Amino acid sequence: MGTPMSETATKAPGVPDANRWKALVFIALAQLMVVLDATIVNIALPSAQQDLGISDGNRQWVVTAYALAFGGLLLFGGRIADLWGRKRAFVVGLVGFAAASALGGAATSGAMMFGARALQGVFGALLAPAALSLLAVMFTDARERAKAFGIYGAIAGGGGAVGFILGGVLTEYLDWRWTFFVNIPFAIIAAAGAYFVIREPEGSRNRSPLDVPGVVLSTLGLVSLVYGFTRAESDGWSDSMTIALFVGSAVLLLAFVVTEARVKAPLLPLRVITDRNRGGVYLSLGLAIIAMFGTFLFLTYYLQVVKGYSPIQSGFAFLPMVAGMITGSTQIGTRLMTRVAPRLLMGPGFLVAAAGMFLLAQLEIGSTYVSLVLPAMVLLGLGMGTAFMPAMSLATQGVEPRDAGVASAMVNTSQQVGGAIGTALLNTIAASATTSYITDHIATAANGQQRQLVQLQGMVEGYTSAIWCAVGILVVAAAIALTLVNAGRPGSGTAAAGAGAEDDVAVPVVAH
Image (cartoon, rainbow, N blue to C red; front, side, top):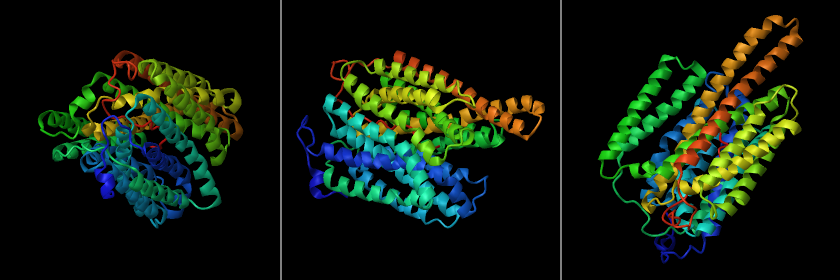
C-alpha cells in the first residue's frame, strides 16, 4: 500500500530514520483519535440512546461491541501488522476506522450503531499495535526513544480528557452524531501523512504462516473473558451465563497456551510473555489499569450526580490529571529513564498514584473540588505518567523486530482486559456498598429531602469503598514492579536498550 520507495527503503543499521519525528506526529494523531473516541462516545450516549430508541438494557452494547472487538482481536491485529507490514496495517486501520465512524454518525437504528462500534473495534485492533510497533522500529537511540515515548504518551493521555470536553461541546452545541464524524478528518490526515512519510525498516517483518488455531482460540478466549466481566456487572457474578463465560474463557485460553507451545509459528511466541521483565510489566500495568478505569467512572458520576457538574465542566475538571500525566511522562519519566532502572520509576510512580487514590477515598458529599479532588487528580496523573513511561518502553524491549507487533498488542490486551475487569469489579463493589448503606439508613429518613440525602450518601459510600480497593490494587502493582522487573537503565549494559521495539504510553482514559 506504500509507495515503492517507502516499502523498499532501507537504512544502515544504527542510522535513525530521517522522517522519524514527522512520523511521530501522525502516529500520535492516530492514537489521539482512538483515545478520543472512547470518552467522546460515552458523553454522547444518552442523546444517541434517545434518538435511536435504544433500550436501557441494550445501551451497554454501544460500549461493549467496541470493547469485545477491540480486546478480542488485538493479538490477531498485532500479528497481521508483523506479517503484512506495519505501515500498511496502520493506513488500512485508519481508513477502516474513518469508514466505521461515518457509519456510526449516520446510524438510523440501534443495530446499525452497534455494528459501527464493532467495526471501529476491529479496525482499532489493527491500527493500535501497528502504530506502537512502528514507533518501536523507528526510534533506536535510547535517549531519543525516551523523548518520543514521552511526547506520544502525553498526547495519548491528554486525549481522554480532550474527549470529555469535546464530547460535551459537540453534544451540547451540535449533535451527538458529530462525536463520530469528528474522527474522519483525524483519520484522513494521519493516513495521508503516514502514507508519504513513514519508511519501515527492511527485514523487520515476520513472514511465517499465520497460526489459525491460535487466532481462533485467543479471540474467542478474550471475547469470553471481556464479555464475562460485562455480564457480571449487569447480571451478577452468580448468573449461570456469567459463570459459563468465565469457565469457557479459562478453557479456551489454556488451550491457546498449549497450542502456542507446540506450533512452529505461534501467534504469540511464549518467549514474549515469559521474560521476567515483560511479564512484570504486563501484570503491573494490567492491575494499575483495573484501578484507574473504575475510578474515572466514579469520579465522573460523583462530579455530575453528586456535585451537579455539566458534562463540559466534568471534562475540564479532569484537566489537572492530564497535566500531571504530561508532566510525569515528558518531564520526570523521560529525564530519568536513561538514568535509573525502570522499576525505580514504576514502583514509586504507582505508589504516588495510590496516594492520589487514598485522597479520593476520603470523598464526602460536601467535599470541595479544590481541597480534595484537585490534589488527588494531580497525584494520580503524576504517578501514572511517571510509571507508564518506562513500563511501555520496557514492555517490548529486547523483543526481536519480527515480534514487535504482537508484543505491542500484548500491552494493549492487558489494558483492554484490565479495563473490562476494573469497570465490572469496582462497579460491583460500589453497588453492593451503596445498597447496604441505603438499606441501613433509609428507615430513619423522615421526609423526601432526607431520603434524597441518604441516596446521595449511599452513592458516595459506594464510590469510596471501590476506591479503597483501587488503592490496594495500586500498592500490589507497585510491589510487582519492584520485585519482578529487574532490568537496568537503558544503555547501562544490563538492558538491551536498542535490541527491540518499544510501545506507546497509551494512558487508559478509555471507556469500557
